[in-house]
Length: 295
Image (cartoon, rainbow, N blue to C red; front, top):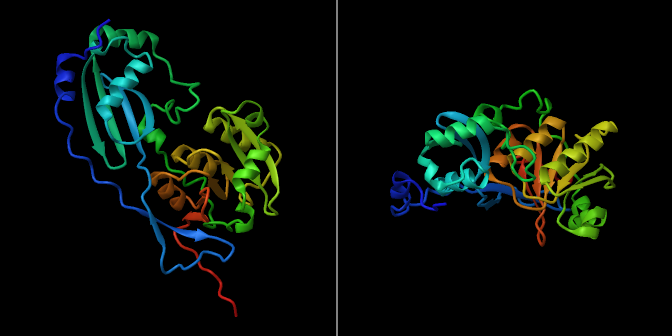
């Protein structure tokens, strides 16, 4: 089997790399500590990873939407196609066109007729992958559907007591039974307004862990707008979407959020915090809060 792409694609990918696109503007956060939000007049800036909805189509037919960093997209198109079994040989890819539009990118991959007919016969959703995110969604409009009907009508809810975020990593580790036995597990926990961990759910997939926790809470009538949900994984758009749809008031992640999920959290009235390993929690959403001064 040849490992050489088609001549037209090889010619394009052999060209010098184009200049890097401008980095997105840093987003502001506030320190959320026992003293409140700190000095609101001097918010801190943080450069966050860029996240974009990438729609993949073959010969003009929608195939999947992936959440990805919008760089090296022709490499991504080739690797995705081979790695997911869409083509068995890079020569089957005739060309890749990249179309950018705001927060979205479309990759139009052109296959030769033999490969395209084989894809149509075997076409199936990319479901069951533990880390695929929105890969089962076939159109940008579905992947980025507005959440207006789910957002809290009263705006952002109350923020958790900063004391409940102390030693959060240790709290989660103690709650993870499977992690202690085998490792390689993500977790999501729910902490109530009194700082008690009520539920922990684990899975090899971060989205699965979140789904299991939301299901456990909803089944038992837990009021998710109070307390907070904490996740061990990075915080990306699909986890923000899940939280808003389920009525979560506050989402805390142990890894930094992406730029897109901060914007969506702010727009949809979700409190969003990042708890670094060795620093106070960082409040990204809401954008600013009013702190009551002592009288």
